[in-house]
Every structure is written in C-alpha cells, then in structure tokens.
Length: 349
Image (cartoon, rainbow, N blue to C red):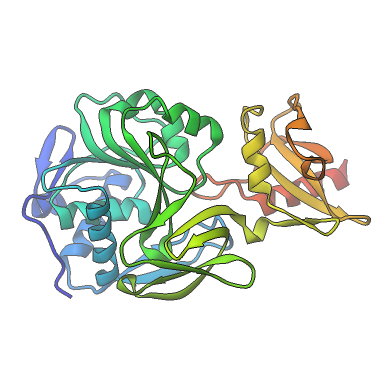
C-alpha cells in the first residue's frame, strides 16, 4: 500500500531538527536511535509488512507480522482519539524494540507530529518546553511524576496502573489515559481515563472496535479496520456492553482455591498501599485446597501487612520473600518463573 507520510513530520534529536529523509540519512552509532531510524525507513520503503516482537508477559515471546494498512489504521485512530494535529509536539521515550515505541514513530509520520527523541530510561529528564503527547509505561510515569505537568496528554500502557500511581496522578494537570491493547492489534484499541472528573475503571473501545466474551468470560475482540476478527484474549473482563468493559485479571493467573476462583490482580490492588517493593499474589499446590494463596515479595525481609482489608478467603496463607524476581524484557514480573525459582530454592534449603 502507499503509506501516508505527512510533510510536517519532524524528528528532533540533540538540538537538531530533521525531516524524514534527513533523519533516515543521519549517521549515528547509538543503538536505540538506530531502532527509531529503522522504523522510519520501513515506512519509506516498499515493504508491506512489519515484524514485531511480543513482550513475553503472558507466555513465550514470539514474532508476529502486521501489514502497513493495520499500522496506519492504528496511528490514525490514536491521532483522532487524542485530537492530535500536525506540528503538535510529542516525546518518544519508549524503546522501539516493541510495538509502543514503533507506533509513536508511525503516528509522527502519519500525523505530521514533531517528535522529540529521548533515550528510553526509567525516569524522564527535565523538560524545557510544554509537550502535547507522550506514551509511557506505568513504571516510567511513577518515576517521572514531577515532569508530567509538562504534557497535555499522557498515555500509559504495557501493564496495570498501580493504586499508588493512580492516586498520584490525580494531582497531575495532564489528561492521563490507560490503554488496553497488544502487539496483535498494533497498540491500543481501548482507553480508560485515569484522572480528572471523568475518571473511572471502564475501558471504552476506539471507533470501529467491538467486544464480546467467550465461555471463560475472557475478552474477544472484533476490529475489522485492524483486520482483527474473533481475537480471543486471556483477559477476564466484566463486559458492560459491546464497547465497554472492566478488566479483572489474566485467565492465566486465576487461582482455584477450595473451589473458589480468585483473581490475584484484584487482591494486589487492595494491598498496593501497604507494600512498597515488588510483589504479586500467586499460589502453590496444596493437597487440601488444590491451590494455596501465597504473597510473593521481592527483598530480604517480609513487610508488615494488615490482611484484614481482604475478605478471609482472599487472604494469602503465606508470605514468601524472594531475593530477586524474574522479569520479562519489558520489566513485567514473570510470575511463573519467579514461583518456579522460589520452589527450587525451598527444596534446596
């Protein structure tokens, strides 16, 4: 297909401003910057498909291929959803190894944005100017709260928004949204407002996207403009209608303890205010109940926790202290491998 390249698109790096051709020709040995150039070059070239790497947060990382038409549709939908116009300023702070960073570059090329390139790290550097749009992981946002007032719109993606971060974002003047999507949908296909008067826990579909549920109560996505039909996810949701849902947790993580289905993400949300180190709720095999709830905490000592905030059947039966969690390439906790490492260490002890 003939891809759209807006003549106002600019890339700003190290106090230099480039048009698309100049940016692609710019000589650099900086790995993360080369990744950005490769996305821009792909958009200029005749290749019809882009190979993308999934994060591996819900299984083995894999490569998938998306056509340019889907990438252009995704970019256009985002530009429309946030009312982004030509020459609006945006910041790229996500690595281009994954779909979130790649789509920031493609949105720039499609919408004529002025994209400021900043090396992806855990915290934003001090910014001199106000900026219209940025996409961040929840961890990046938590480490950059003091910088977020420089933005008009902040898009969070790549994982759940912790309770403490959501509380802190209520004092931020920028409009903050939490995205729902995956590599297969070329970034987000649903949004949730995180702060402001219209804050709620419901995700709403972008135009042209519709939702259903399967027998497991997992979300099924139909989005013809994204060339997606009957895309079955492992996300258990409360479906409000065909364009709104409340996310409850991953089907992969559901714990069956004594015949009761438990969503660990819901427990974690209630404990976040008390625990100030990486943690998650998991389970180990139990002869009596099938699965026994365990709170896994990264560190050397167990924090003091008041479990009375939880219903009795949701209270972990044990706190397991793990010296170092196993993380994915996108800084998400790999629950399965962390529990596996813990059990191996316990056997050796």
